[in-house]
Image (cartoon, rainbow, N blue to C red; front, side):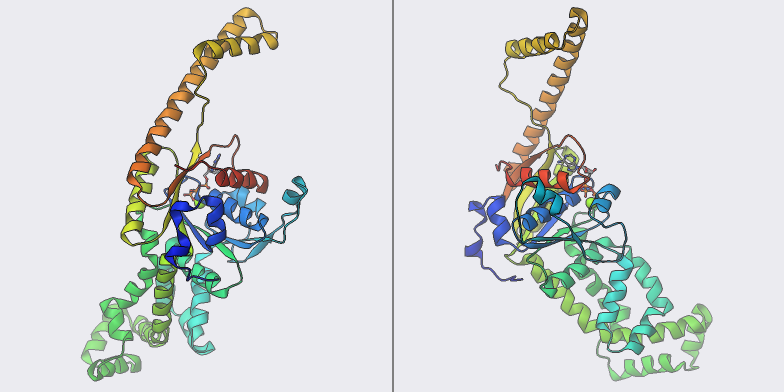
Length: 399
Ligand SMILES: Nc1ncnc2c1ncn2[C@@H]1O[C@H](COP(=O)(O)OP(=O)(O)OP(=O)(O)O)[C@@H](O)[C@H]1O
Ligand SMILES: [Mg+2]
């Protein structure tokens, strides 16, 4: 997968989503909780597959029914191919494309990473069985942002896919995800870790050596008394083996950071048409712009669209006609008519509110475009609904 297309090739201003699909190879869907990141990511990947590409959606915590529909009921970082037969049959068409999906499993990702970076079986086992490693992984593994970027490195570098769409966890702090590649590096850079891991001065080497050898000096006697001798031994073994992994972490960190900034990467900021998630979206946009990362667009998902150019008289006549057609008694018809009018007016007000938010967004987003995608009548829980959502996305009107 090429991550090196230049800026001239990538003139976003002139691209719609459809064109962008052909120019970019990594899409990252970010945004607040529950706005539709997972649905959008899966719908996009499906569109790629239907257009003949080999696409992978790397997903996190999808709704259970969607996970089942994608064959992702089991955890374990397994790349699973999803059959396109039903969908292709629906349109009587053909495609050489492939849709793959994988659900992230944090613990497995981290264990795999240790396996890859360890120099031999002995150091791998020493780390995996180490109690310090276990407690560290409990902290880091729970961190889905970090795990998502870790897995991303693997699949992008493997070159197995034409395109990868990354779903991300909801952001409590919008920066968590963008900063995640640095998290591990910062963790190993912490003073104490550096002391153990970075090339050591002679004096420090001696100290580490003594720790490893379980010296009975007063300092280590005291440390052993406080922390327990076994714990001290665990620390020593852990650091001794972890030192070999240091370079690997740094390399991965800087590669993923480059990937985020590459011209072939597109960030889609997904938002619901409400103030709270639009606030998060705007914050995300400004952070991405600050970091010179490519904001390809903001997707305003689940928009309510209402036909607006209907005059009150026409609406009244239409509703009454409908009631008559249904053979309703005039009194029932009147009741239903007034309810429908209230519902229509509420929907109209909601739609106008959403429109105002979209206007605000377009004033605050200087790069990329804003696309609105309608709220579908049902939830997005199977491949057919994903297809509908994907088509709406491709046909979305851009502001
Ligand atoms: N355009 C749409 N129309 C109707 N329902 C939608 C639409 N987009 C998403 N949904 C539904 O909204 C719910 C949330 O969607 P989704 O799981 O994709 O959001 P998310 O941003 O990934 O959530 P989380 O932050 O919890 O991971 C799901 O039930 C999904 O089916
Ligand atoms: Mg999700």
